[in-house]
Length: 220
Image 1: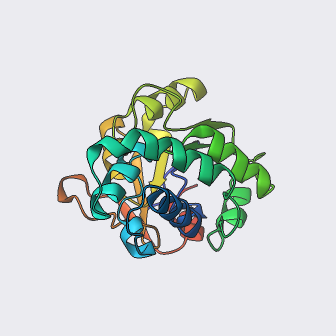
Image 2: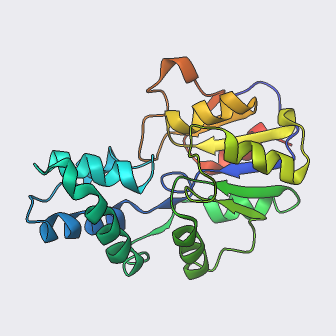
Image 3: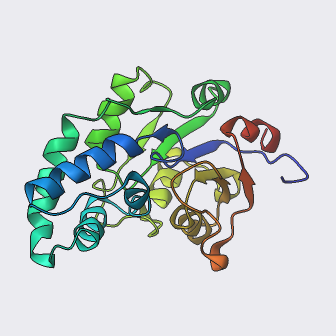
């Protein structure tokens, strides 16, 4: 933990594995695609390792792991989006203390920066009755680039006219940490998500927390 609270005006959160546990619904949808392509299905833990860089890498890696070929990827992406759109909220839920923590920071700007398609993020938040707290959502299809390219993060900083020194990015992966470092903002990684936030030694987070509520100990 940091020794002194930091003044933060804009909190930016990753989505999958940071705020919401979407893994079961994602894995179900991936396996429906693989079944459709007559490939072997994958364990939830295998799919876990493929989440975080967007739908195309997710399906590309899943197909390879299932014994398929590269020519199946475009079809697989379309199938995944179709299956997942109808299965977004079967088992998806917020991690413990996420709602309460976000509500505790109601006086600050809060946004989401994810590689997930923005429509899925909007639908999940609406379905969980928690869209209102977020002032902006940047998904993997909002701009041409995706994390770890800092474009989306820099656009949010510009939108809210906040100095990078007063911005915090929270995520569960080295991709999130790298994004934050490249934009010059404070980075906090959660230990409970889909990825190992310490997996890239060149982009170590400023802090790792085990529960989102611990943010209240870090910032003012």
